[in-house]
Length: 162
Image 1 (cartoon, rainbow, N blue to C red):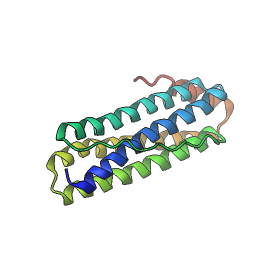
Image 2 (cartoon, helix red, strand yellow):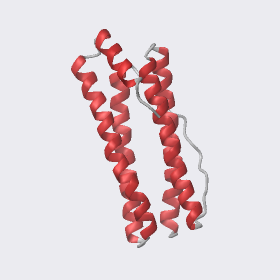
Image 3 (cartoon, rainbow, N blue to C red):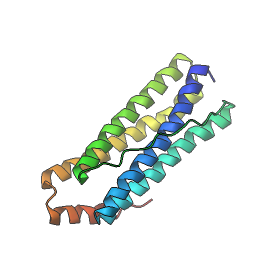
Image 4 (cartoon, rainbow, N blue to C red):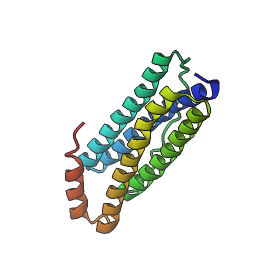
């Protein structure tokens, strides 16, 4: 694997694990606010992000690339509301999309067909991630976090399956 692409994939492993940390931090906020459905949704999201990191890890192992585990930053914990969290979630997912697009560009420049094929899964995944965050955020904006509507949304999000 070309060195720049290898370095970027190592960074992406860290970024995916940071995403898991971020979503766990958001889950804590929801637990503290007695919104167990939203907390569960974020815990599942965190597990999904760990799975994404492992997808990169396994791919790099398969192609014989050197893996370097990088330090993971502490995520923020100063959230103000469900709307605040889902705004930050959408913003974060957009950043991840940009990271994936950068990886695609690097793979194309390196003419690394296996990496391009693997990365296509992430391109599709990011469409879904942004869509889900947008739908929840727009719902929260519509209901303006009215207690009864928030409780109903919490119950709906709690139905998410792993």
